[in-house]
Length: 257
Image (cartoon, rainbow, N blue to C red; front, side, top):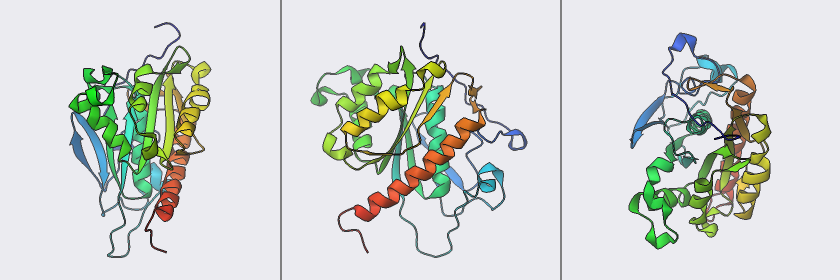
């Protein structure tokens, strides 16, 4: 498609001795285990965390140490890629941000894309959605925080990405922490995050992380994030999302002092 985004990618398993610092695969460290969401391998944190000094995240100080016997609360995070392709560059980006968030706090991360919803997403009323499409909408509504990503086509976010949120109950989105990401064919698409995604989630009265992440076709190569600026923005957005989760937890009804 001319002027659009070639949202294609191949998630490569890279040997530990040659993983770049910004690799989506490289962001999955020791101390993570994976559960299956359809055909997707997604990370889930456990109490035994990666040893200090191992990997890029440790070098940046993103190492979580659990000293007490009290288990920290585990936040339910939904990462949603508005791409109809799998694998895709958009999915790689939301997975990478979710993995980085998992380094900062305990999370239960579930990753979805449009393939999880299936053709039943084409309904015009919520009660006409197929079971897989409804599960996606309900997962978004039940999350403690969202990581969203969309490929950019012709200067705007994907239509089916927006269609998913047309079914979401706005009341369930109020105050929800959200991190924004997008992929596109070049820099001319970068402002879609600020001019398209941020106003959308402003309508929902969500708490949106200040740092957004945009990656062009040259920033992700063979399933790896190769641009250090993009990798740095992923780390910043994850830290901001973690802080927003703490605020949301403190402000929740019944939260302990």
